[in-house]
Length: 503
Ligand SMILES: Cc1cc2nc3c(=O)[nH]c(=O)nc-3n(C[C@H](O)[C@H](O)[C@H](O)COP(=O)(O)OP(=O)(O)OC[C@H]3O[C@@H](n4cnc5c(N)ncnc54)[C@H](O)[C@@H]3O)c2cc1C
Image (tube, rainbow, N blue to C red; front, side, top):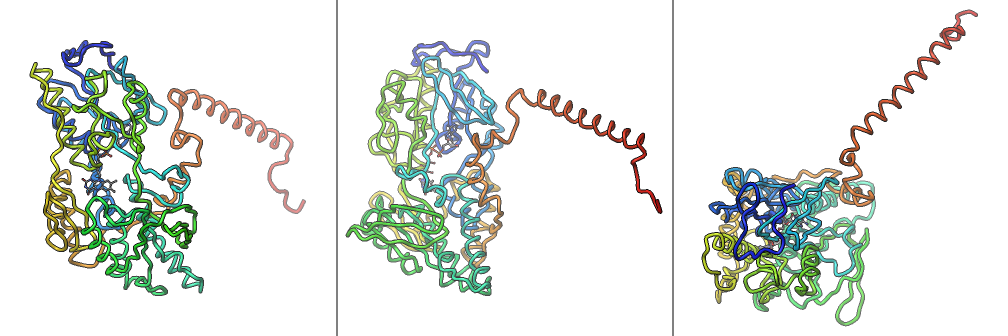
């Protein structure tokens, strides 16, 4: 644990840490906000501690390609330790932040029951957002979201596993329609990309691989309660995307609210009041986001408002009311209707880093944070995408090439870029998928862990308890061996050992 920073000090005149003499910055999260914020402080006279609950930085926009076997998880999730290895003023701390004490300037993080408390002079909170099931969290067991590497690998297992189970079922003469029906909930960019890729898998990639089933008969359904596909892209691009998806064989059901999800299917209510059930084993949830619960912790301590998605209202300079030393960036914030996209997080984190650096150098504060919109894009399938850059609207191959170039630029690390390009060649020019490996644990581990009272913590010794447990185990083993030895001696003395021949 590091020393506690001076409580209540004015952050506009940052106080150096006791001991090291350097200003301590704690950054929460290793996503777009966390990593880019940490990197932006590389030349500043500060000590940065980046606390995150995963050991990698995640390029979320390409998660769907991991789920559908195009890319490996390593290509979109490099270890943050490696990325920051040359940044001497930065260290990485694994842990889930469970508490932020704004008064005492302390961040508490936990991993497998091990607690660490980090003191800060400036804090950048970039903990992002999770999936929202709109109050129906039990849907998660049957329809995983798309937010993490675990989600993507589980979905990969479920998608390819559904085709395997269908082949097995068909071989046994069983009905397999529910196994060959895939439902994606949410027609935003992630839902569109997932539905398009599953359709390509079924109709193109896998069509020669099975004997008992025809994968081209697979049904891919995209469902959304909204009245159009890709709402942020406007009605025209939304309609074009819908038509492209339908050409690929995706059934698009709009104005349909999912009301129930179970192991074998899901139920939805249409706008005219009719209720429809689709039998489907493989469902994917790509609807709704909920900001990190840390936003609530911060709101409770500062009175900053939360919106319906749990995002926290921040000052125009991204700080919290009454706490100029605390910046919140990215998906967690509610400011000027900013969208939940990577550039908002990157630009916000760089702004916060510049402000921290400027304060240390005695520079005047920057004007309020202003987001520069570089445009949005989404792929539909290979060679097809939609893009919106300022007033420009692009569709088809040109938009797809643009999507390819932009994503390549933002993938972290040279080797990841090279391997991603190779995999794209394999999948887009060829018919193959390099990353189809899926294991039983990939599919079922999440559910199994959720059945343990304390999750993974139940699988390891509590801190400090291993030595005591080993002594107790050894004593128990010794007692059992002594008991066994006594019994052996008794058998020998009584002549009861062995088998008497001809006796
Ligand atoms: C499937 C998908 C596709 C997307 N596609 C696009 C796209 O094409 N273009 C685009 O611009 N945006 C896209 N986005 C949105 C974009 O990824 C986010 O806006 C961006 O990641 C937000 O950055 P962030 O730093 O706020 O949060 P994140 O990048 O989510 O990072 C949050 C970090 O905080 C960590 N964390 C969370 N809670 C804690 C805790 N309690 N303690 C410690 N660490 C914690 C997480 O492990 C993670 O490292 C997509 C998102 C998803 C899920």
